[in-house]
Image (cartoon, rainbow, N blue to C red):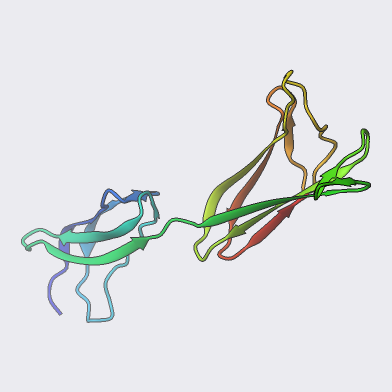
Length: 173
């Protein structure tokens, strides 16, 4: 029983290590009395802006009441990406354990990106095509799978992979 709470203010105090993605405070005119299982739920979405453990505090007040607080800790872990690149020539000539490619022969460069145990967002892979001492490409870009964006001016191929799930592996040829 009891009277409803009026002019209820709910606020979520976001620590510096988290970035809110929406409202961080709510006002409601009236909140009816409830038993332990009732009440009102407010949801805040935030993303990690800085690694570490951050204490997130929520407060609620109403007319004629004292402020109440509760908190929880949020741990932000950075993603751990690893990358490897291998080259395989079609008809290489071997000289001192070095594969030498004949002019106009093709080679496949395979780039493998492995994500660690935490989701990685906005993943971008850049592959720089080597240039000779005159600034000319030493090898010529033909294609990639999945398709990358090749910029002839910078001699780079860029793949915007987006979000990688925990432990996800992406292979670029």
